[in-house]
Length: 109
Image (cartoon, rainbow, N blue to C red; front, top):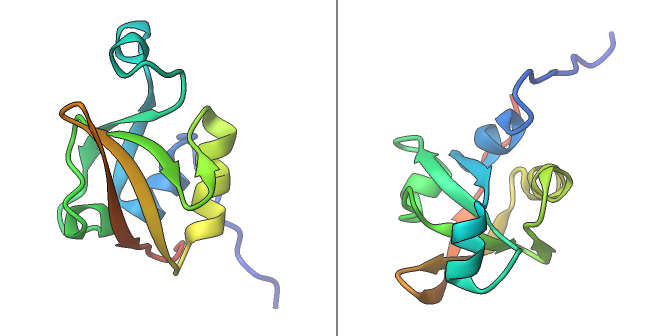
């Protein structure tokens, strides 16, 4: 019997399933504020998710997941595929400071 392949309508849905938060591309103002074009804004965190357990907050900017810099949709997809069922380090920008969090990612459904 073949393996069921899950197809997501939302381009960030796979990322949300693995990490438990919704990312959004940075606005011009946010890029200027952090002094970088790299990063994804956390807009929502699912209660009980890996992101929730790691104390990642809406408003945080994710700069890097493992060795993958967050720059665009492809980097988000790469991070979700690489990180499922693994513990990874996430580099965040919060309140003017870079901080790191360890997160144990969920597997894909």
